[in-house]
Structures are given as C-alpha cells and as structure tokens.
Length: 443
View 1 (cartoon, rainbow, N blue to C red):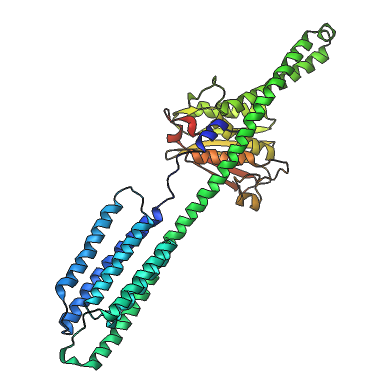
View 2: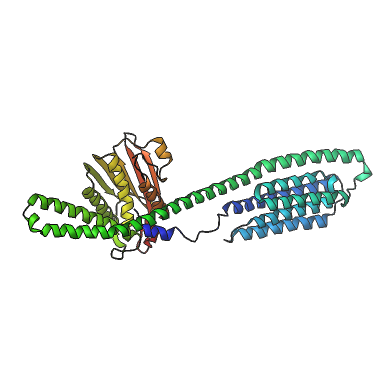
C-alpha cells in the first residue's frame, strides 16, 4: 500500500471551480467576431451611403459602432484578469451584440434591411455557448427585437423612389447576408463547439479522477484499519516464538530452532510491512521524509528488491548524470518497488531498471522479458482491478502507482518492447522531489 495517510490528505484538496478555459476561449472568439462585425458594418455603411447615394444617419450609426469597439476593449482587459469567465458574461455580451444590431437595423430600414437575418447568428451562438435558460432568453430578445423592427424603424429613402431598384438591392443584400451567415457559422460556431467539447472532456477526466480518488480513500481506510488489527497478534506471535526459543525442550533441537528463527524472521517482516502501512498513513512518527540523492535513493530501492524477491538478475543502470539532492520517504520508494515487483512477477529471471534525466525530470524505466501487456491491459492501464494475474484485488498496485505519480505532476507510460517483454516508464518532475517540497504530495 502506497502512502495511505498522505493520500487521504490529498484526496480532499481545495479544488478550483470547473475549468473556465472554454468560456475564456469563446469570449476571445466573440471579440474576433465583433471586430469582423465592426469592419463589415463600416464597409456596408460607406457603400450604401456613398456608393448607392442612400442617405443614412451616420452619427447615431457611428455611435453604435463605437459602443461595439468599447465593449471589445473592455472584454480584452477583462480577459487579462484571472477571474473565471461565466455564462452570465457570455449572455450579456451576446445580448449587447443583439441590441447593437437592432439599433443599426432601426436606423436603416428595419426588417426591410436584408441584414436583419443576422439575428439568426446571435441565436445560433447562444444555442452553442450558453446554458439553457440564457439561450432561451437570448432567443426571446432576438425575436422581440425583430418583431419591434417590423413596426418601428427609420425607412430608407432611395434616390428617385425607384421601388424596383430597392427590390434588386434587397435581393443582393440577402445574398450577402446569407453568405456572411454561412461563413461565420461554419468558422466561429465550429471553433466554439470544439472549445465546449474540450471543456466537457476535461470535466469527464475530473469526474474519473474523483472516482478513482474515492476508491483510494476506501482502500486506505481498509489498509490502515487492517494494520492496526494485525499489530497485536503479530506482537503476540513474536513473544511466543521468543519464549519457544528458550524452552529447554526445544533449545537442544537445532532443526526446530532453525525453523523457529525462520518463523521469527517472517513475523518481523510482517511487522515491518504493517509499520510501513501505518507510517504511510501518517500514524507513525519515527521515519520522516529524509534528504538523500537520486543515486542513493535508487540504489536503496533496487537493493531492497534484490533482497526481498527471488529474481535471477536485476540489471540496474543509473544514467542520471550529476547527482542531485532530493527528498525521499517510504511512499515514494514503494511506488518504484511496486513497478519492479510486477516486472519480477512477469519475468523472474531478468528485470532491467534504468534511470536517466530528461530536461527537469527523473525518468525511471523498468523492463522485463516476460509475455508483455495484452492490448486490453494497455487500454485499461492504471485502472483498478485491471490485471492479468487472475487473483482478487489484482491491479491495485499499478492503480495506486499511476495516481501517486500523477499527483507529483508526472506520468506513467506502459508499452511492449519490440524484442518481447514489457516496459513501464515513470517520469517524475525534479521540482516535486526537491528539498523543501512537502512530501504530502506523495500519494
């Protein structure tokens, strides 16, 4: 069991609110879309007023454009802050855009202006970006604006009053409006939809991580309770075996004495395992995290595995380079020991352990010469009860390893070797192991 107590402390962190990255990205997309709207309106107003000779109220229309520019400037300043973006902000921005469009249409013919159908773009954006209540509210606002423009608008006055010319301009304007709507929907709505999907994927990952951490809490409580319960009978067995060793009837039987010593050694080993569990749970104070170096730390882990497990060869190579001080504790050692033990189970005659440095990370690769990982095992690597050993509770070791390394900011990658066997690579950021770094992050 790996750093149970530290795990319990880490499983109730102050989680931030759901990532607002998608909302911020969508606000940036709205800024870009608004710049396009401002530029398009300037070109359209200039073309209609100067090119077609249609009189337009330039001053109020320019004021509406200035309001859009001011909103964009305020939004850019807002995005520089670290405050999370919200659904209400997106709704207010889209509502402002709809109101600005309604203002421009009121000043230029109302619903007879072919660009009145740009309200559909606002509704589409709201359906993609907003929560249900705000999307419906934006739809209601757009419908209200469109309905109001039917009866209230400033009519366009064509030079000479040629109605056929007005109809021709209306058809051409509808074509431009349709093309503009289609381009903007295909471009910006697709981008915003991708941002929403990325957010949903991150939330799904967070839910999965929360479920895994809840599982670790349950295992931690079970292991800690079992360790407490086992402590007393193990101590009793140790005392009884020690008394047997001194009994006159057994003291002169060398064969029985050897067996008693073997039993005492196994009891002491069980007691050491129980002590390690309690230590990892934060209930033993005698073995605090210690300052060591990468070389010494790895040498101790490999030496411990060589002494504890029957294995033909553990080929160990430390290519880390310059030695570096780190903070080590029992939990961190057990993470690596678990991976080595799994390799020994798969390949008792040979296991390879190599250490290297990549950028600012310690990379530990544990290879074996066994049958390798099955495809379904690779697909579910690190998930609880994903194991090929066929015994109850199998797969929990790697599940805990993956979670411990992830909490340190690292990663665990499993793959099959081209020549046969498997390899598990642990990447541990040196910053997480540095002196002064709280070891509560382990587990």
